[in-house]
Length: 156
Image (cartoon, rainbow, N blue to C red; front, side, top):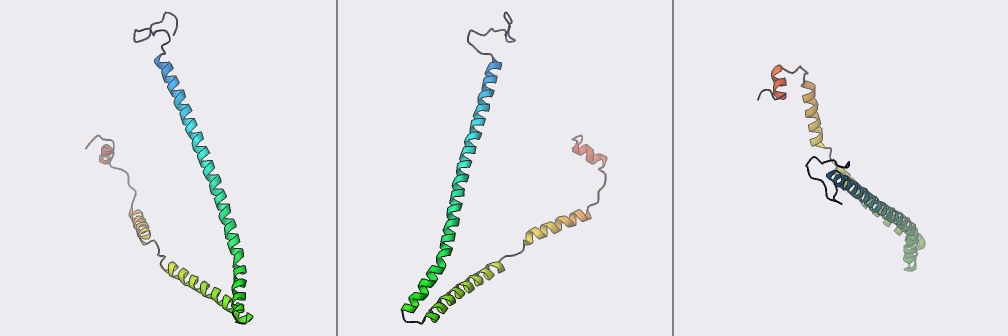
């Protein structure tokens, strides 16, 4: 404040007392700082989660590749194990191949069952058709004076 000026409320501030404007400016600056800090914290947390999610995804992909690579090894081990039980080598490999064909058929059967349960969105289609019918029958017309007055609150 200028020297000798009297504030609008007629009271002069004591030494060290801040004006309302100074208090408001400080509160605004602190609130702004708080918001910026909260945004920085959210970014840091999200970044850490994204990094963890990326590492988890990479680990899952590597695990899938290793599991896929193990299938031939276990297939050979199973076939040679059957051969060790006295079944000829050709039949051992045929049995293992047949087991894979049975697994594939079972999975294909499950796939067909689940796909047959998929239905078209009948309620959505019916709603869209009803909306299209209403819009098709709607004819634009100018608003009447009464409708305008009612919309503007001139009449109840």
